[in-house]
Image (cartoon, rainbow, N blue to C red; front, side, top):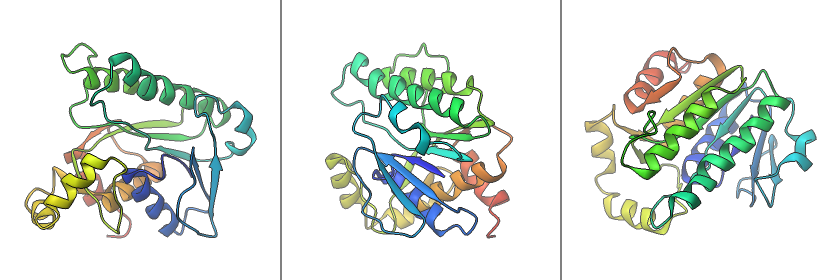
Length: 225
């Protein structure tokens, strides 16, 4: 299993799920910095410039699935800068992986509100929509776009974004209640990681999954239930 962005909040959840899964034999965490996790089947691949992974191609082959969890907030960014870090980076990596691993499933963590038409007023939603559309055209075995809404961090996981950390800290006393009250709209990092594994293993009828679709996937296809 390849994971891009394993040090982020969503990526940490994906990493924990992969390491706990008996049918995942090896995990390669790709990023500019190493994870804080130590595990016999975990390997960290440090890539200073993720826009160019050609030097590391020999270490990026032979994988059945890629969980792409890299992402940045659009707050304070120009459309050009956000496009570079969201669309350009993601598609550059994906194009190379599709060539190296044509039987791979590519699972991209997008976001609720993404604009598939690419014509809406929201800049980030347009960019995410164009990114999704390009990924869905690539010659992977399968490609899935996950659009979670509100995500509750569990297992000591914290966001790398300071404003998000403050936000979660303030809401922490009521997060369990919110999760119980709105299960179709609120997911935990643990659940999102499990959903990605389900998609890697057996896929889903839809290629674009909103939060409610992710919840349905967990309820119907999780082999542990």
